Image (cartoon, rainbow over all chains, first blue to last red):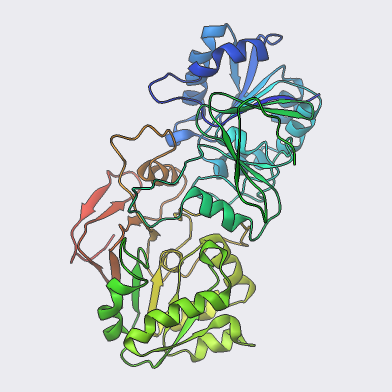
Amino acid sequence: MKNAIVASTSTLHGGTYLEYLLKTLEIHFKDADEILFIPFARPSGITHDEYTSRVQKAFNNIDKKVVGLHTFEDPTNAIKNAKAIFTGGGNTFLLVKQMYAYQVMAPLREILLNGTPYLGTSAGSNICGVTMQNTNDMPIVYPPSFKTLGIIPFNINAHYLDPDPTGTHMGETRETRIKEYHTQNTVPVVGLREGSWLDVKGDTITLCGNLTARIFEQGKEAREIDSGSSINF
Amino acid sequence: MKNAIVASTSTLHGGTYLEYLLKTLEIHFKDADEILFIPFARPSGITHDEYTSRVQKAFNNIDKKVVGLHTFEDPTNAIKNAKAIFTGGGNTFLLVKQMYAYQVMAPLREILLNGTPYLGTSAGSNICGVTMQNTNDMPIVYPPSFKTLGIIPFNINAHYLDPDPTGTHMGETRETRIKEYHTQNTVPVVGLREGSWLDVKGDTITLCGNLTARIFEQGKEAREIDSGSSINF
């Protein structure tokens, strides 16, 4: 049975890395001493080792050892043997390109469908969707496909931002971008605001955190759902 | 000799479509009665016909006829015979995918190198760069390549935005995104703020408008250049 936490962000403004999620993670990862970390998204371009150290520091608070996927000679096998997995944020294009290069997309999907506990934040949450096509990231590399894990039957827009009614900038709002997406695609999109996450338990997907989330479906008006709601299409 | 205007945006806050550029365009397009318009980027998902009408309305002010590329049976030939070309903004992924599908990337590059006057705004400017990899757009479709026209020897980040020092949103700043790009790529990037444009005359590229632009090169600190400066690397 799928068992995943799909979070909009790793860090709340004024908080430390993963701080707001630690209590939830203590329960989520209770049966795992060691967490396999996928560092490929490289936020701000930091190295895989630097990123893994940052994650270890956060997980010290709940006594978990963190091991970077980049340290294994056989990444596919490392995924298959993992007791728990965390994919951190950064650049989604880079993450997806590297996951295909390391041939870990398919085995990761398989173990997640079989119930290995998973945490994703930001880019690591985008890849839980059907495709990565609602990322906010810059296309700094060309992945072989936009298709991702598909462990949830919709896409994620992480760090969802409401339009600024006082703004003078003429770039598209997030809602406009997602509407443009729906001129070309049918997969629904969930806009997850910072501090929100999805709790995925089998086919039940529940919105958690203090905020509402925004749901976009092709040909329908966007709508808000409350925290605690199940997400179904 | 190349003769292009590469503008950050089509519309300034409080202005009408192309209004701030009309005096410049009157001179730029003085030898053309008719402008071939490439509507593929479809801002807000509007149709090619709707988009072409919007552009015609703006160009009525300087007595130019506008014809949409989508109305031609042979788009390659339409490009080759054009007296002037304008590519409008919208979604850069969609624009580039359609340009490859219509097989117009190569012939457009050729006529631009030969001096056909060109205007790009936003997505239509991004494609003037070596690649589209510094777009802010959402990857709503998968283009066969990120390579674009390369009529300037760097990439454009249109609608360039400075970091908001009072912001609490944890998504990446534009500068962070471009720095991440330079962990993977060597092509320089010019961040063009709204109201700025590049005047390309042969190999001389001049920053125009009231604002400075921000220059990003791999391994160097980002720097500002003044309006009126030439851009060289």
